[in-house]
Amino acid sequence: MFLLFTKKRRPAPKRSARKASPPETLSLPEHGLSFTFQRDRCRTLRLTVKPDGSLLVKAPAAVPLDAVLDFVRSRRAWIRAKQDFFLSHRGEGPQFHDGGTVFFLGRAFTLRTVPPRRGAKPRLMGGREDGHGGPFLELPCKDGTPEAVEAAVKAWRLALAKQVLARRLARLDELARLRLDDGARPAGLTVRSLKRRWGSCTVRGQITLAAQLIELPLPLMDYVICHELCHLRRMDHSPAFRTALRRLLPDARERERRIRLWSLEHPRV
Image (cartoon, rainbow, N blue to C red; front, side):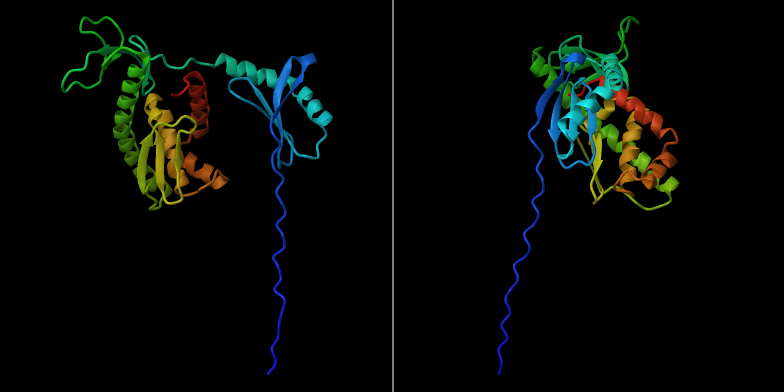
């Protein structure tokens, strides 16, 4: 009887991934520019102008700092153009007080707070009975503090968004199955306040939509919903995804441009 002993091989140690360096602030005083700089695992230099006008530059570890600075200098005109664009479309956030403004389907409504009464609900009104004054939202509110008004507005918005977005999703889902000729259907819908994204779709088909969507004009709301419905078919932004989106909305690219402008001009809360 022979016993064969073999030495168990240890797994090769994994190569440690290069971690991103801590961000630092660099400047080009001669051009009046400063920016946040960070090295990470990217393969090329990347320059981003954020909506607030600030700059973010990321570079591979092997790129010398002098090359990074030269790159930023070469993009000065583009940077200024982007900053001017964002500045020209920068809007103020909502002001939560009596006389402030809220939006519904792209239309502005003036806030009018009223004392809460039993059974009283927020109401969108077209104007005063005498024909003067624009549309307004009559909002029951326990007091007129900004915190109380903000809470009341968000509660009204969420309740209304759950109704409006559910109906709109059902209608566009039917259109999508007809035009895309398949049986894909959402597994469910969640509506909640989102500050960074308008919507999302999981691999299981659960769609989440931002309550703030009801503030947008209807064509822009429909764009977001159709975008997520196309993710039921393609979980990426490949050419196939874009083709499906254009079959639903031939002017999808223009709507995408408009929603970006809306986002700049109407900061979300």
